[in-house]
Image 1 (spheres, one colour):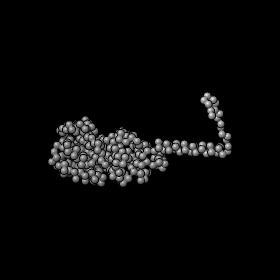
Image 2: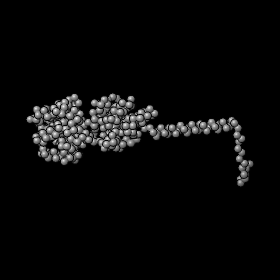
Image 3: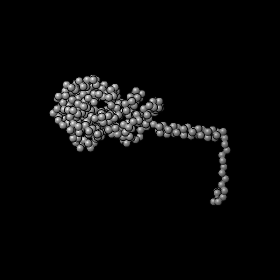
Length: 330
């Protein structure tokens, strides 16, 4: 019996070879457990279910990325040029989904990521780039033809006169098919003007000038690049002004045709595309939406570009409802 206030003798067991072995084994086990925990924490910190491959460092792509982050903030990000890091991540801990911002990023992922689901944004004409399949989805930059026509109608002074549609049938057939299907319901007549090169624009528009009341150009590589002065554009701009008719053009918000004098364009909003993409990725990750059911979706956030000086020259008053949501050039 030990009374309060008295000393207590502490007896340390005598070490033996057997007890030393047990201690060493326990120490090794603890070390392995701590090492495994470290690796687990490291992998969990490094990995994420979604890997974002960032596009070029220009404002449109930054805006799209910022919009995406607003809706989905838990992704890991790398630059599109970091192919070695990209390949390493796929080998060591592949993500469940890859988000690619821009054409070059999407093409890189498509070539290197195998069957991992690819979600793209800020990509024009994705089908033309081969971005199709059950493991590919995204938000296109292309504004559907029927949407463009319905907006253009707001600026048409006379819907009884046909709208001349200048396009390359080799690259824009799908757009024209959409437009032809939508035009009757909108009360718009289309006069198709197919061209294969910029040189044909002047010749073929001359045939329809007497009957048309407006011009809509669906430009493509054949008569936009390689001719930086865009003589076809200057010619059409002068013709539209002299005939006092609206000159519409299909383009993305990075193009400068409205700034240079075209009356109007309906363009996708880059930040809006990013938010739309982030919301869809969120729904896929939460299980509310199946990836294979997403497909390629049109942009929902749209805005006008308007050249007020051109409108004044052709005697057109732009409705306040259009100006309210427009980027206006003078």
